[in-house]
Image (cartoon, rainbow, N blue to C red):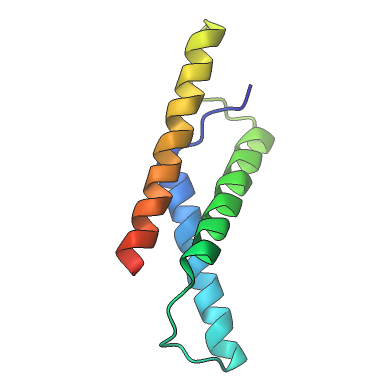
Length: 95
């Protein structure tokens, strides 16, 4: 039973990861005009979602979950899809 991840938090984490990656590239002396590889951005977004999930579990802040396990599973699936969609939208917006 994975807990639902707030899509906004996942999107913010993904944006922060991309900004940090860009900053590292600039400091390393690579060309800042070079666009970020969409696959790398997708991987960073997945990592950000995983970190957000882990942080949520560690803080113990449980979102309001339905008592029915099936409803909880559906809510978790919906949250994952929304987070994935938000991350994909950000990748598309940056291209």
